[in-house]
Amino acid sequence: MIEAAEDIHKRGVEIVAVSLGSEGSFVVCSSGIYRARVPKIDAVNTVGCGDSMIAGFALGLSRQLPMEEILRNASAVSAASALREETGFFLMEDMQRLQPQIEITRIGG
Image (cartoon, rainbow, N blue to C red; front, side):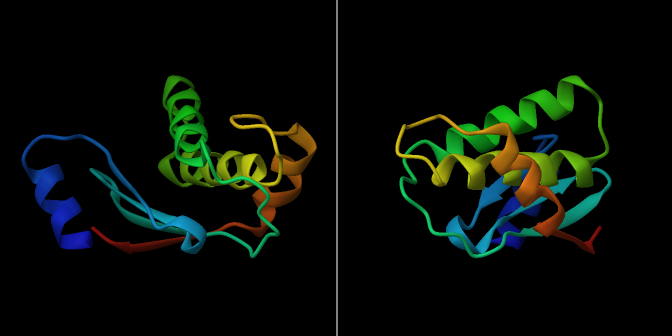
């Protein structure tokens, strides 16, 4: 999957984000390849978690945050939304509790 994401990036897509479900995600961008590992949670509803993650990315990009911080925040929003029955909803305190538990590793680039 990383090779495919790198190929997409080389063809002109600035940031390629790939969800790995409960295993986290990774990003290929100009500053490298970053992997996010999320803590194990008791997911209640995973519908919309990918959309929540993309919303977290959009917010981080609009604030011009470093990619590691964008990925951590986006992962925390996604995981926090899985803790709620309502689709596309999360509690800020869930996100803030999860943020420090998300491991970001630079794996290449």
